[in-house]
Amino acid sequence: MSSDASVSNIPTSTPEVSPNLQVRFKTEGGNLLLLLPAESNNTDTESPTAMTWTEIWQQLKQRLKGGERFWQPKTEVQLIAYDRLLDVRQLQEIAEALSEVDLQMKVVNTSRRQTAVAAATVGYSVVQKSSLITLNQTPTEKVQPLAEPLYLQMTVRSGVEIRHPGTVIIVGDLNPGGSVVADGDIIVWGRLRGVVHGGAKGNSQSVIMALQMQPTMIRIADQVARGPEKPPTQFYPEVAYVVEKGIRISRAVDFAKMYR
Image (cartoon, rainbow, N blue to C red):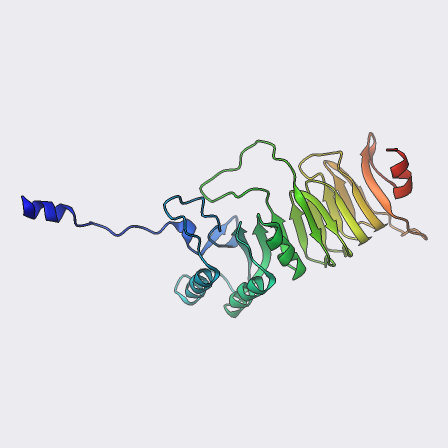
């Protein structure tokens, strides 16, 4: 009896490590994703200890040096950071490590405002989500309140896209070829010469403001308008908003009078 009891206490298998606690590569919809463990680890209640940056960095290097390479050279990578807080230095270290194996980091997907700002500052396209959605969860149809405004002090260059579930405020220019998509308002304290989409989830009350309005294309909710072919001879701070017939652009001083 004692012999049988001792045998029954021997584990038959080693516990599996949750994939949510590992650095992973994944292909989805033709895209190569680099997924980092969520900082809160609320996806794994049995492992409440969050991974440190050193542990993540070591795992990433192991994945890149290992035999799991299934990508083509020059493949673009979307970093899925979830709610993990990453600064400019850490983002650059990830990009450099990917570059060593001929991968190019282009997009940072995050639910942390600070990570979004850091990514935009160094020129990556940014997708910021208002809530953490794991691979094992599906988004709900419930309408979420707008996230806190995303404040960027930078020039949005060609090829960079900023996505945010709230209002976006840019102190700088939005260059041709750059784009901003926001669920709230878009305010550009500079020259707006790229593509903008305010009220992206359907809020037609959203507005787009700029010190110098020269958009390539402008959208508010489901309304679309293109910029003028010839730039005006004088520039004023202007506001784009939706009226019954579509999008109207007015001088900021005139727009302000409407709401006195």
